[in-house]
Image 1 (cartoon, rainbow over the protein chains, first blue to last red):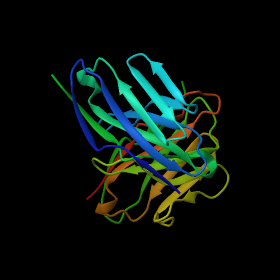
Image 2: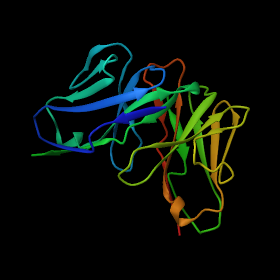
Image 3: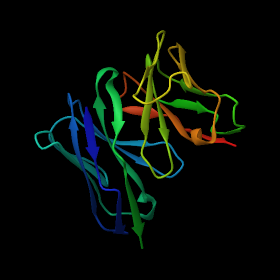
Length: 110
Length: 116
């Protein structure tokens, strides 16, 4: 079985930095994903971590600690368009099924 | 990058009728596709795994006779919501993974189903 937990909602100020945490318990870890989803749209890929450490991609970075079952997504220089849901996801079982956490709704305000 | 096309984007149907949603991988072959359902302000819930040339694998609690999945080719999977009811109104999204790609799973644009 598996469980993926992340905060339901967060707010932040334009230009600031925000960290969205995700803890997971999965049987057979095989990598952790972060997706961004705007309301009414499909998720878009942000990052995939399979090894411990921080991976930076422009304004977005993702961190993974496999021993702690913990990941975070770091968003820098926040822009209004970053207001969206951020979904943490991991593989489960055969066929590499991707299972999502409940998602964190981020609201960026001026 | 990999592209997954999903149609229709929106559909309104009457209670008791059936609706078919198509999911196509445009520039890669997908032996496996996944169907998700998302209710407002909730996350994506995996419904089933669609397997090319064989039966779909359904998640616990998902009625296989109600949500018919067909994966007849390496680029097309269909989800048919049979005898739809208002509680089936939701956002349905398919996804697939390009085995040659590095960006995880690609999602279709989703289908907003409204049953009236």
